[in-house]
Image 1: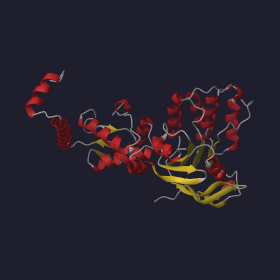
Image 2: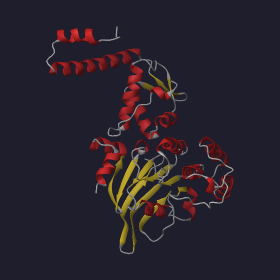
Image 3: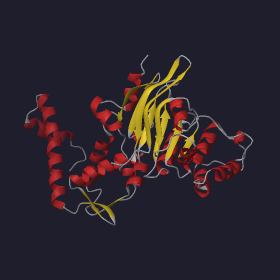
Length: 128
Length: 233
């Protein structure tokens, strides 16, 4: 993992910072920007780049470890999991929840599934 | 559970009829950053003066690594005053020499490097530096000590918003995991992501205190928003 620019989110200070860091890391891992087995920079380095308290960052990384997305090797540091199946499953889960929100929103506006298909084709833009 | 580096218990202080601090208690654990928040006149500086040993006639108890404020504790505490404390005619380089001879834990090479990275000229007199530059100099002198507790009184007051990130990263980068920071400020929005715990002082009384992340999730509000609520006139 290099260049923390891609990690740098604008934190919403009204929500616990560590959950926002967890979400951001998840997104980076599930999107493949941080590949399996990639090394995570040291806590202090990341904290400094994000402008957050090192303890907050530590807490976020511990949470990601608990969920199995990161693991620590005693001497060499912290890495993204090599468990491709776990990453795929979590990615699937995230996609399902996003689609659900999307469909709920359109359903509330009275769209049918056929409408949704038609709308996707019309407004799908560059997406292939 | 590690021992707190700083322990403040039931501290009160009065100036004549005026209660400056009323039964204030808190502690700061190693590696933690505590925000001492409140508007001007809320008792922040009085609290700090007690911790650094400048005010002795208070009631209650203060312990710094087990010591009462005094000769021993002064070796452990690095203090950033809220006003320039060095004579204006001093050249920056001489200020470094002064700190080197005053404090056994001062690291001149680190101070030199930090001044360089913050673009503070070392051949100028303090009187020739802008207010922002003077604040950077004082921060560097404070953070270049290997202290146990860093007490920073309004480190952001005179710094323009663009330089705040730089000041914050200098603070974050230069305190060790076995040391702690007590940072007083009335400017919350730019610094709230660095606090472990916060303490809101209102007219000498602790109005609200706790872990920053817990307060965020309990109230669904930022520390800055809470601050504005607590101190709404």
